[in-house]
Length: 398
Image (cartoon, rainbow, N blue to C red; front, top):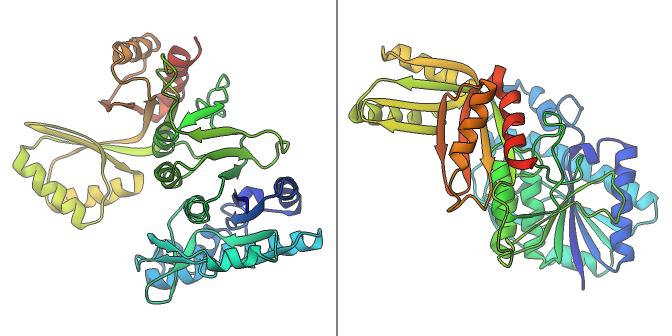
């Protein structure tokens, strides 16, 4: 039995027109002899009646009195509604289809509500359904806890659901359908010369996703990587023979692998700068952790600590430092811009080229860090579009 998993995001199932576009890809796969497992997200995005944020707003949003377990009860409904609506349309159009919730499809998780980890995917129900159906539609983003309660997998969880289901079913591949034709070298809304990437390695696309590219959730890529599962990032609105970006193992037969794959960015950051010694820094990090302030992009020297938070966590950190009377410098409205590429290892001159290019355009670098595959810089929000375009031109337009 040939099995394929296809995942359709919120914009791909938001209305009849979008669902009909998705249906073309399902029909093509069925005609090619596949049994198809479909994983769907909640209908639409923020503002749509059954989108996750809309459901959260019904119970007070951030001011809710519900426990994480109770919150999972309401946010899981969006995917269930999407599953039922999509299955109805498939049946109306002659597909032999059946609907399942995440628990129905065998997703078993731990009890970490709102951000559950999948412990096992029991595929018996889906495989049994394939005996008499061509298509099984599964609610993404959800599973069942060890205590028998519905859980959700955190934002982007439907991508992870699709990858896990594909691995468990030993599918030939998983296709992630979205509103773009595949992975681009940068956000095309910011860089008009951004171009399409036909093939990327798991590491490259995971790093792009971690650093702000919104096309796919990094956890889904990690799952596919561990199983060496071929994955494609495709557009719901493209023709069925347009296969988007293939995510697979790095082609080691290429003698000169590209140095830089793409430029990603994360907005809405706050830089926090403290003049402290290492002992004081240890106490500060402990206090921040106890107050659930997530920090990133950390530079530590003997007398200074610099790190970044989200805008929301920056406000929490400001209150903490005021309470402890710790002098600190905040730089709000910052953006982390990342140069990502599997070919940077052992390639000299990347930092020099970056600094030279930004200096020529007058972009001030607030902070830097690097790893084998990524160079990070921090800039102000006013400069970030110029920074992204400058780096894209320097590394990806020659």
